[in-house]
Image (tube, helix red, strand yellow):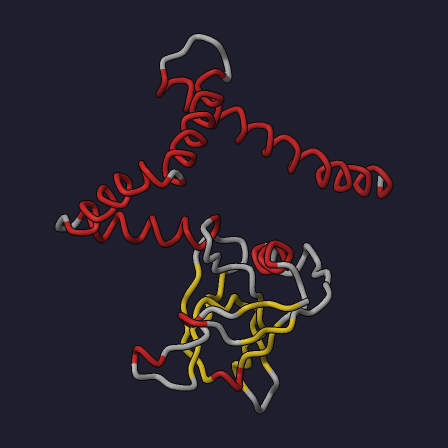
Length: 200
């Protein structure tokens, strides 16, 4: 009986993640197909991917880039719409944009007396424009959740973490169950606009 229970829980570790992943992927495909109204399974999802790639190519072109910048400016000026658009745009930019905000995992000292630390991501290494010299902003994601909080702390309480951003995020979201693989630490030097250059 004890052997059966052990096999059962080991099977859960393999079965549940695989089934949930497949179910989510199928749900996404079916939802996009329903939006596009295409009868071929997966065609709507493929068409969406191609459309996004085409928009990206046009946004990178010197001629059409100005048009997208004009549209961006309009969205940022509309009442209420600018709040929603700016938030979505900044979050998207943080993950896949040129100034990715989740590639610099750090340890934040919460209590110097006990040595309590939290894993977070350095999003701004200079807050002088907010009249907070010597402070940085760090995003602290929550375990088993897609939420988090932004904290402003003195620079001396932040220590770079020698790990890939994706590994650090998985470590936090999984509550530490995913493990944390260290990588070769990057040497950071100050760069204009509050973003550092990295030298390997």
